[in-house]
Amino acid sequence: MTTTSAPTKRETRKHGRPVVLLVPIPGGSPIHDLWAGTKLLVVFGISALLAFYPGWVTIGLMAALVVAAIRIARIPRGALPSIPRWLWIVLAIGGFTAALAGGRPEIVIGSVELGLGGFLNFLRITALTLVLLALGGLVSYTTNVAEIGPAVASLGRPLRLFRLPVDEWAVALALALRAFPMLIDEFQVLYAARRLRPKPTPRNRKEKRQQRRLEVIDLLAATITVTLRRADEMGDAITARGGTGQLSANPQRPKLADWLTLAITVVAGGAGIAIQTIISAR
Image (cartoon, rainbow, N blue to C red; front, side, top):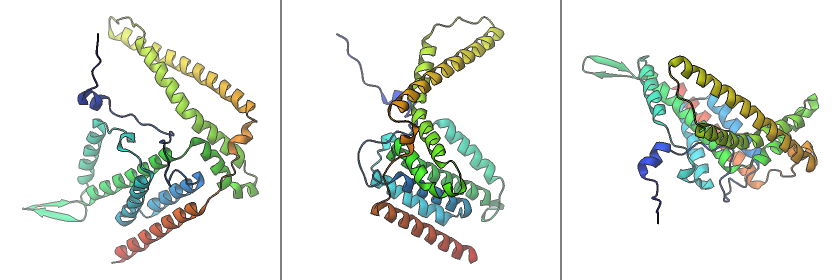
């Protein structure tokens, strides 16, 4: 009788948690129940705000807003991907090189003056990036992929006055978002099967390089074949369900919670701009 031991902490740390995108976390919360168009508007508004006003105050307020939304959505820590070590090394190198730029404020250590301006700018850009990544992850973890296409079609309705193909754009986006997780799973299975195949041992570097080129060509050919097969199956399924018009048709519209969410975002953004302007004027 054989027993299988549970994976150790060292093995868990070695493999880490992968990045999972476009797959909503099971369960319900007020964030899950929001209209997908509301989430897209919030993402667009916060991104535009941080692009034009990338100050510490606006970043802090938007970070607090995102953290509160994550707590309300009840997203577990296990859903977050593991941070690889090489990323910490890249951040350390980036922070060191940015610190060499100097700038105000300056601190004096003995007879040496150190300018912290470059390092603070690096921290500000890093914090801004983390806020946007957390916001994107929040939308990915709380939104069904099937709701994004109809939301884009509803938000782009004013553009129809200019004869723009809004519905076609929404259908293309919906198909891309639905196919993306499916193709990732197919590629992972394909890559795992490729690694299990026996490989001849190369005798020199030339044969090793040639073997790598052949593996890349084989993987590309298999990937194209799998993609075409999946596209054909998806096309048959869409035709059986009534055509591509069903992908952009959804009667869901914003409710009271959606308007409240938009109002909170606008108030927080306006407060951040006002405080940042007052601080800059001094």
